Image (tube, rainbow, N blue to C red; front, side, top):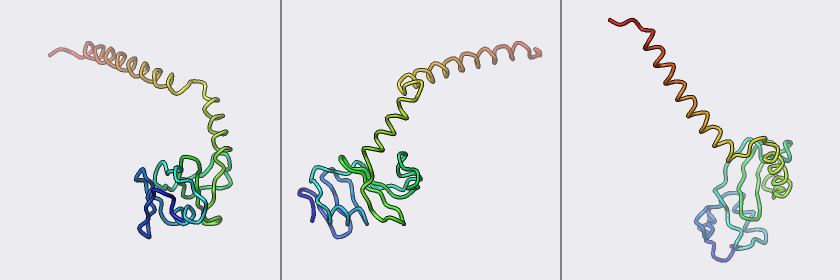
Length: 133
């Protein structure tokens, strides 16, 4: 079955947003009830750890959709990953950061500016120490 509004050329299933679904993920989408609005967010990609929430899975191939996450490993084939469990762990990791990411950017910008200022002062001091011809 091809979700309404999607196209399939026999090798590539393409969502209305133009992102392709190929190989085993294509077969999975076509063989299972799939909401037409559950578009992929990006093409499939190989990643070293499929789920932070389940390290035993290890690496494989993954494709994120608006409402689902499909994974593939040699041992398991294509399967629906536990999106809720993964989101929960990711939120815990983000909450455990002492500095929120936006503050981190501000901190790094300040450090860079301070480094540039100190670098200029060191350069000036080195010039003063050099003998004049």
